[in-house]
Amino acid sequence: MRRLLLPCLLLLAACKEDVAAIPDPTPMTDTALSYFCQMNVSEHGGPKGQIHLEGYPGPIFFAQVRDLVAYLKSPERDADILAVYVSDMGAAPSWADPGAENWIAAETAHFVVDAGVAGGMGAPEIVPFATPDAAQGFIDQYGGVAMPLDTIPDAAAIGAVDLDRELEQPI
Figure 1 (cartoon, one colour):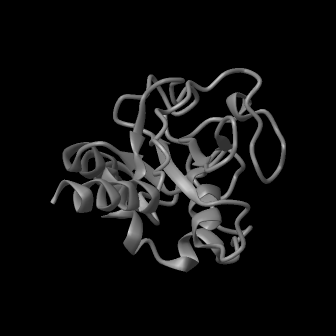
Figure 2 (figure 1 turned 180 degrees about the vertical axis):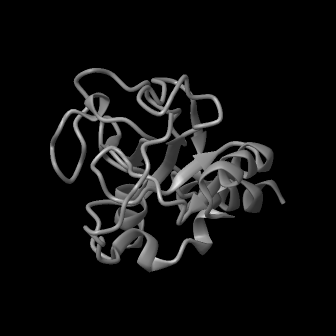
């Protein structure tokens, strides 16, 4: 029996897949650049996002959550996604200062879509919150609908931007 047990254990160990650890969120710094535009993320208001990719030493940052969602919906990516974090705007000091360390996992966030508010790059923003109550408070003031990440419609992130539409800059 022992002769069989050792080869089986060795075989199981050889078949074991290495699973990459889920990285913690990285604090936003003054040197973080937005993935699409390569502009400094901290110079723009509104919620931010970061995605950790397998094989990359640090996250890729996004100046708008809308851009992060567009990246997630894109079929062309550089590597497997390990973790996705977004700013918790319920914990943000202000719209102009979304916070450097108030990151929440995107899969647990409550996203307000179609609120008519402008993100850091001027396009309509998708606004994340850690709690449904915080999302509802934002909806009461600016409109929109709350939903989980996996139900955000493509048009909210990758649709055309109506340049004639007036967007608010939340306080």
